[in-house]
Amino acid sequence: MRILGIESSCDETAVAIVDDGRTVVSGVVTSQIDIHKKYGGVVPEIAARSHIEAITPALEQAFEAGKTNWDEVDAIAVTKGPGLLGALLIGSLTARTLALTKNKPLYGVDHVKAHAYVNWLMDEQPEFPVLALIVSGKHSQIVIFESHEKYTMLGQTIDDAIGEAFDKVSKMIGFGYPGGPALAKAAENGDPHAYKLPAPHTENPYDSSFSGLKTAVLRKLQDICGKDYRFPSFEIAPLLSEQQINDMSASFQYSAVKYIVDKVKRAFDEYQPKSVIIGGGVAASQELRKQLQEAIPQEINYAPIEHCTDNAIMIATLGFYHAQNHQPDDAVHMEVNPSLSM
Ligand code: KG4
Ligand code: ZN
Image (tube, rainbow, N blue to C red; front, side, top):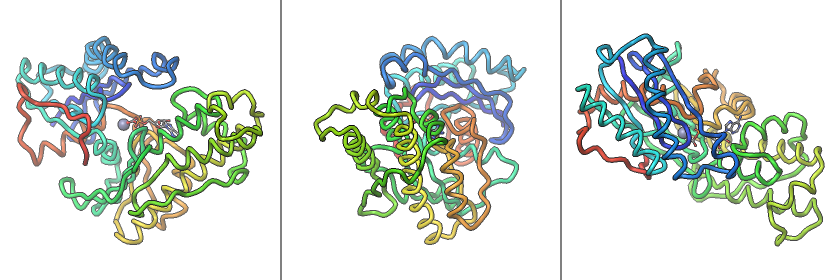
């Protein structure tokens, strides 16, 4: 079954074609990072407008790169949430229009669940029960999958997501958006134990709170600069030495990753899954991959880094499994859901 996937929930316009949820025919990602960088984060209205400009060229490129055509496409899968309303609407309107004009079944899928599905592209398939850690700029979810359709979210963030914390700390120490990769690079030359940071308590042990960790970083930085808690975060960076920046990058990365890895380990011990998988932009973190493998007493088969950040391959892959168990959506009326939850 050849599925065309469309993703537009945030700042990447992506189109991919995948066979049987397994074989990538083509995958195109048009990133808007350079456009949003100067604002220090994603501007929703600009994102929506950029998707309008990027979606048709991305579709053309996906067909061209895959040397395929509409006759060979069996269905369309599209992100219906969660995400930015205006951004989601561009992808879904495109998918609905194509479903109607090309006469193809349409499946709206969950972006967060889809992040886990890049693991089903691998030669070695995850085995149920699967314990999944989905960590991105907006999500920090620990999910146990009994099957493709039966799953329980054990915990999620009660405030900021882990990627969001990476981005905010990165901003404080003077790196741009998105912060994860820049912070990871600086951390290579820093001491992860230079600054001690807390592991915020949550009532449900599988939930997480990254806002508390971010605030602890702010207080520590104000302290390093000899300022009190009223000193603005955006004035801190110029007062820091390169070593202090590297040390805070390493300390924050180590603590944030350890905090979430401890929770996954706890879930592993309680649920004894056959496979452990990770997905989402923060799953690109080498520190996360290292700490998780050290904590889990079975070999983890990590998905390639290029499939962890937002893309449409994951949408087409989840679309394949979704299509096995669901009727197609109504292309005339399908709605998006910005706060869709697993
Ligand atoms: O999944 P994604 O592309 O978009 C969302 O759905 O949010 O994730 C983006 C997030 C950003 O917060 C970015 O800083 C983070 O993933 N990220 C990383 C790394 N690469 C990207 N965080 C930590 N370490 C990395 N190497
Ligand atoms: Zn994402």
